[in-house]
Length: 219
Image (cartoon, rainbow, N blue to C red; front, side, top):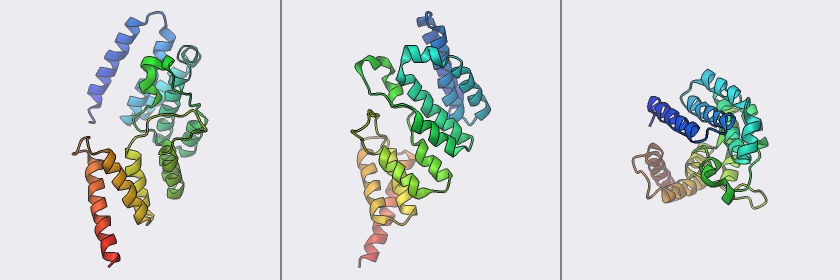
């Protein structure tokens, strides 16, 4: 909702509570806190602060690896990719995301499971290609995000918004039929969610316009 000051207060309350409940793992706690604040500062466009948080987190990365295994390091890779995009370093963002190991989900992941599929939007690589002016490559990457590759261990949740963003790229590149298909899929998946969400409203408008244009061209 854009209320970053409130988000910062709530995150600080969470990390303070977590520290009190886990006094035996101070280094791991600091890593978690710094990574979470790095993500918040990145989304708040406080880039210098986000970079400082990531630098602090890396001082405790070995302790975090020993305790958390791959789940938190996966989350760290996605957060670092977002930060690199915010720093206008798309090639570095692509490299970090592609070299970050994605473990299998497991029962032992436990309460850390939300971090396995986080952040909420992790379409870093396609957005990096867009930053580089390569929409065709971005389309390829969005299609990968929307596909479960059984040859890998990646079983992260697929965000429906990827269909919307892919549809817009298809529309921009003149692939009308593909755009209609992806807008339709997005709206179907979103049918029980917030109807006043800006992407949902925009998708309905774009789909209706494309359908009218296609109807005219087929006459």
